[in-house]
Image (cartoon, rainbow, N blue to C red; front, side, top):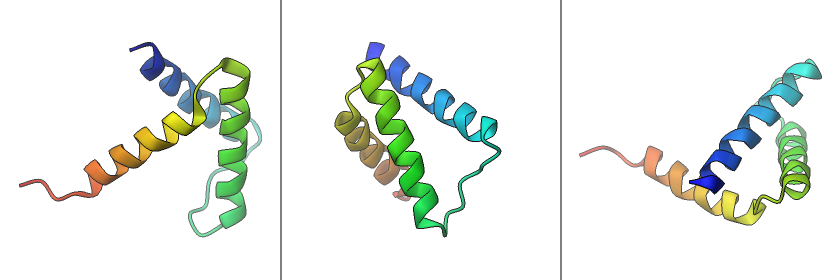
Length: 70
C-alpha cells in the first residue's frame, strides 16, 4: 500500500501545482498534457516514486474504467 499512498500524494501534488500556477488541463492541448506529465515525472524522481510503474498502473486502471460493466 505504500506505493498507492505515494501515487495519491503525487495526484494531490499535481493538482496543487496546477492550482498554484492558475492552470487547468485542457484535453485538446497536447502541450498542457506534456507539461503535466513532465511535472509529475519530476515529482516522482524527487520522491523516489517509480514513474513507469505508475504509468503502467494508470493504463490498467484506465482500461478497467473504460470497459463496460457486465
